[in-house]
Amino acid sequence: MEYSDNSALHPLPSKLLDDEDEGQTVSKPDVEQALKSEPDPQEVERTKKRQSILTRTLWTFIMIGGFVALLLMGHVYMIMLAMLCQTLVYREVTALFSLKSHASESGETENKGKKDPWSKTLNWYFFAVTNYFLYGESIIYYFKHVIFSDGQLLPFATNHRIISFTLYTIGFVGFVMSLRRGFLKQQFGLFCWVHMSLLLIVVSGHFIVNNILEGMIWFWVPASLVICNDIFAYVWGMSVGRTPLIKLSPKKTVEGFVGAFWSTLLFSVLWGSYFMRFNYMICPVHDLGVSAWSNVQCTPNPVFVWKVWQIWSPLRVFLSQLLGKSVTVIPYAPYQLHLLVFAVFASLVAPFGGFFASGFKRAFNIKDFGHSIPGHGGMTDRMDCQFLMGVFTYVYYSSLIREHHVSVGSILQMIVSGLTVNEQLELMKDLRKYMQGQGITVV
Image 1: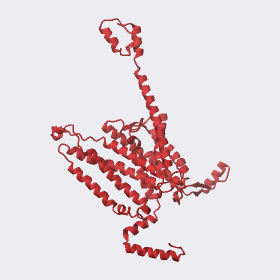
Image 2: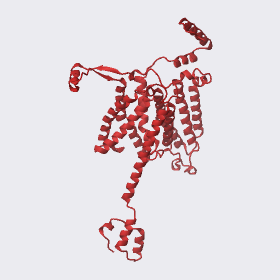
Image 3: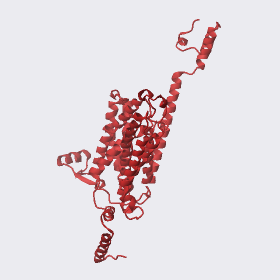
Image 4: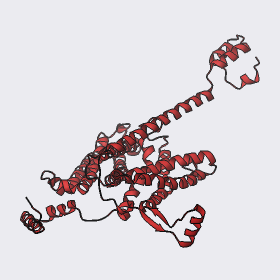
């Protein structure tokens, strides 16, 4: 039986093949009709791709809208979002480690295919204890004026670290008590895996929360720069990308990497300069109840105060002739210079967090870490670069930008922790005497 050249390119439907095997004559129109009824694989693939792009775009706008809404609602909502993200990432990463026993290695065939019943419980116990310690430290540091003036919260503040260590010790003892033959290698592997996850995820999340408490701008702008760099890398890569950048991410190109670098530098100055105008963005947190509509007042950090740069005389003449008007100074804020540093890190270093995650997925032969976000994979797939950027922002800010000065909270902490009750009463008496001498009435 003969067919046209076009029909030879497609496999015949099973029904026609059965008819042919039974000796029945299959006409050419029947073949064409059957081929038309069969879905085109390329068309099916294009349909799936369009649906994937639509889903991804829809959820991108949902995430952006939700993110901005929480930003406007206040710091406490952003902190809750950061904790939710780190919880989902921790769940996705620890889920990769299976505690199935390898009977061939242990020699105990009765345990084959079974799981350690305590593994998940201990995973989340260590997660809870680590969060209790880290966020307890943050609460004590940023809200000293509340903690050390409240008699009920004082024991929590003064004994926080010994309580945290005791809780961790209970978990450690529980882990040792749960060790079982046939699972030892896997249990110790999980123990190391959990602690690595706590270091890379929970500690990084803790620094991100500290950035929020130091001022919303120290979280919002760096996170935006990472997103911006990712978008520009995609745009430049799709437009002019030709040269592969790294084998772990075959779709990344050198052209996209370089183009995103310069684009992020420009974007950082424009984006950061806009948000530094708002007290709500630049003021450290003293009241978790504030929102974008609250009347937030504070003394701004000197990096947000505008200054002028006297232009070098020959350059001043050149610019004046070029622009047709006298130009002697250029206004700037020191924060804009710091923005360039953040942009460089977001462009040159933070992407390697994504490359690290790509290598991680290749090691486990998975496409995504999970399915938390439709069209985007898991939360880990979206947060891989943000953790690295958040840690850098906190270290950079606390080392080079934060003002270190005496506060009411720090003095109160010293008084409560270092003075006896009699010494505190004596201090109050002397302070009252001093204030009365300044003409201040003390009730």
